[in-house]
Length: 324
Image (cartoon, rainbow, N blue to C red; front, side, top):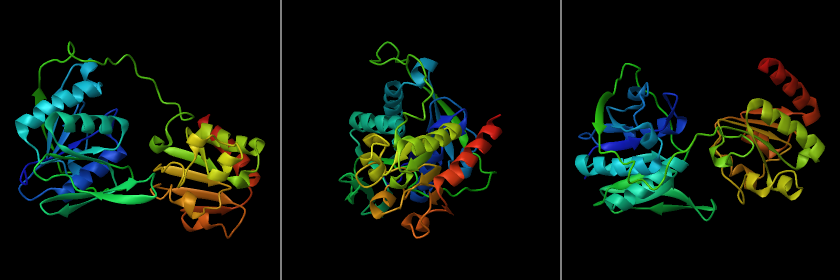
C-alpha cells in the first residue's frame, strides 16, 4: 500500500474547483511518495486547472446525470474503481458529500477512516491525523491501521493552498461501470439553491456576525440587511444568543460553531477567547467595534473603530448602488 497512488475526490461547481478541493489537492501533493501519482476522481464534469494543484492524472467516472449527483451511486462506483486500481490513500473534503462518500466507501472496502482532519503527518509507515474532539474544546490524534486503505476528510481552511505552474496539465482517463439506477435506494429529485439565511454556518462562504454591542433587535436589523445585500448568512456571539438576537444554531465560538468563511464581518463583538476559537479558520475578518481596545482587533485583518450606526447604513447604501 505504501507505493500506491494517492487519490483525491474533488468537488466542483460550474466547472470550477471548490476552494476546499484546492486545499485537498495541495495537501495530497505534500503527502504523496516519490513512486506514487496524485489522481483526482471526478464525477463526469471537466474541471480546469487541476494540474496547477499537483494533480497528475484524472479518473472521470462516466455516469448518467441521475447517477452523477447521487452520493450513493458515486461511492458504489468509486468502490469498484478502488478494488481495480488499489490506491494507498484517499482524501476528500469534509463536506456533506465528502463525508457521505468517505464513510460509505470505508465500509465497502474495509478501509480506515478519520473525518474532519486539521492536520496529517507521517507516522510509522502510515499517517496520524489531528481532528477536533469534545465539540472543539480539544484536538485528538488518530492513527488508522496502515495495512488498510486510509481515508481522510479534511476540514475547510486547515490546509495551505500552493499553486504550481499553470503549464502543469493533468492527464484525463475515462472510466465507466455498470449502471446502478435499478439498484439505488435513493433518487435525486431536484436541486434547490441554498438560502444564506438557513445555510449551515460551517458551510457559509460569507458571514455577518453580531455581538452584545449591537444592543437590540432594531440595530441588529442593520446587520441582517448587510448580510442580505452581500448574500451572506447571519450569526452571533454567545451574548447575542443570550439576548435573543440570533438563535443558538447561529452561535459562533467554543460552545457554538467553528466557521471558515471567505469573509467574516463582526459587529459589536469584543473578541474574547470563547468567540475567537470559532473563527480562527476564517480567511478574512473585518471587525467593527467602538471600543479601540477590543481584543477582536488583534485577529482582524481590517479593524474599524466606530459605532455600527456610523458604518452600516452607508455600507448598505453603497451595496444597494452596486447591486443596481
